[in-house]
Amino acid sequence: MTALRRIFGLWRGRWLALGFGLLVSLAALLVATAMMTLSGAMVVSTGAMVAAPPLMRLLGPARVVLRYFERLATHDAMFRALADVRVWFFRGLARGAAGGIGYRRSADLLARLVNDVDALDGVYLRILIPLAHAAILLPVLLWQIGRGNILLALVAAALFAVAAFYLPYRAALVARSAGMRLGITISALRVAVFDTLHGLREVRAFAAEGRMLALIQSREAALFAAQHEVSGRAAVAQAGALLCGQAMMLAVIVTVSFDPAIAVAAFLAVAAFEPIAGLARAGVLAGHAAASAERVIAAAETPGAGPDPATPVTLPRGSALRFEGVQFRWQADRPDVFDGMTLDVPSGSRVALLGPSGSGKSTLAALALRLAAPQSGRILLGGTDIATLAAGDLRQRITYLSQATHLFDDTIRANLLLARPEAAEEDLWAALEAARIADTVHSLPDGLETWVGEAGARFSGGQGRRLALARTLLSAAPILILDEPCAGLDADTERAFLQTLNETAVGRTVILIAHRLTGVERFDRIWRLSEGRAAAAAG
Image 1 (cartoon, helix red, strand yellow):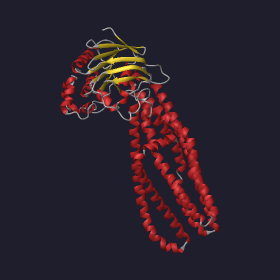
Image 2: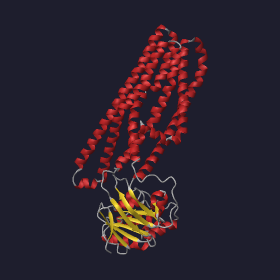
Image 3: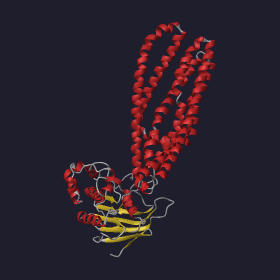
Image 4: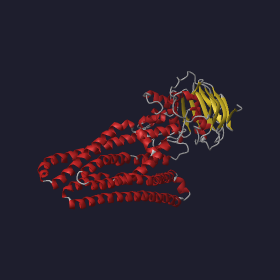
């Protein structure tokens, strides 16, 4: 359960709230146990028939109030703890993603963020709290029953231990592999549905609806099978716990037939076995939660550029960028992207990086932004190794515009403020003017409050790129990296976009990543990336 222990560590900021919820639940449990004990005493004792009712009138409402506050406190604490896990997950994903989600599937990540994190909610509510109840009830049960019959107390202890501890533990071990299969099948179904919806035009164009539907149905069947397996294991564990409870009641009834005074034990046994009846099923949930925790941690802790240094150095004054003997590969089983690559980008210069797909052009941008770190060599900013800088400080100096720059399903204003949250209204319009898109925004009824649609669907490809360029220009970073910013645009739109860029990026260091020389005539240096090295190209 190493993964679950890691999750518990993420909850340390919520331990006070989680502990308070646990205390309230224990108070509700003790009140309920006291009520059942008094009920038993009233059956076997005439004196208790007189003394108990006033106390019962107090305990009854107290139990209702405590149960209400138990639900309120425990669920509120758990929801906040899960929110912490999601924030941690997102931050880990952002650190490990090289300008995106790398080799991972977006639908799989969504399944981990939603389904696997949700599976963790049962760890506290259905496992830890019932286990705490069992730990409190066991000595109470032994003490109360042992006062009248030692043998019955030992039988009760054995049955209680089996139902509360052994069966849940065995169920958790058995259910872990089933839980992992359940997580994988949920993810596979999401991927199939996500791909089909996003590729619906191609699916219809190739008359592949039947094949894609068959794929989705096969993955749905695998999910149902995994759910059936988990439910089956939970049912078996639950049946075992129920049998233990019934065996306990039978033992009490047989004993009471010989000694009526022990009847109070029957009521106490009911009170004790009621909260642990779900622990066997909780064991199955624990196995599922452990598998989910492993999937969440595996996604969030994918190696990236590493954490910030313990003591980051101050940003240097200069903005010259130098790649010095850089050796880099994305994964250990993949070939080198760079093998001793050296490249200089003087401050204020305009540099074009050319090369075929796979030559490392986008990788160079990821390294410069410290979204990934080289295995050897250095990347210097103003003569300072960027590995010694805080990532947030570094990204104040470098801004990035890619061919797949994303426009969020939000307003134009919100999309622009992503680059500089404190920007004033006039700054936003200045950036739009510089990107030659201000007139278009002015013509819209809602202006800056216009919703751009999913991935900027309300605007044409060229307009979307100009909005993305405006967002990039809004940043005060002196280094501007453009990664295939005109990919997918027609020739006229590309030419107009590059002309805008040439006119608006004056005074900044510009690194243009491209496949061909079109639009780079006004650049100071042209480098070609090939076979892991950079070579100066003929002007």
